[in-house]
Length: 90
View 1 (tube, one colour):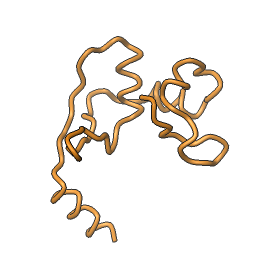
View 2: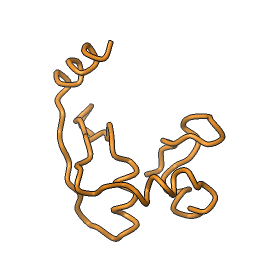
View 3: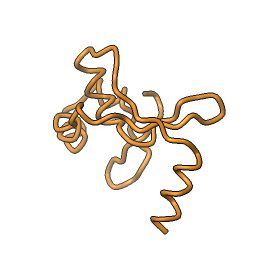
């Protein structure tokens, strides 16, 4: 939650979830996205270099953390699955 994932003033990778949590009113776009995040959907993760990397779901994870959840649902993807998705999107 210490990596700058989100955009601010149109520039990507400027805001960390921790910065947002410290001052949610300063980031109304993300406050709305966190408030509307549906925790019934899992986070999408992949194991890369021995670490779990979140591909989708940072707003959901932030909401879960703010609500005090200790567990979240995840859907794991393999590098092969990601490559297939990337080929379809191209």
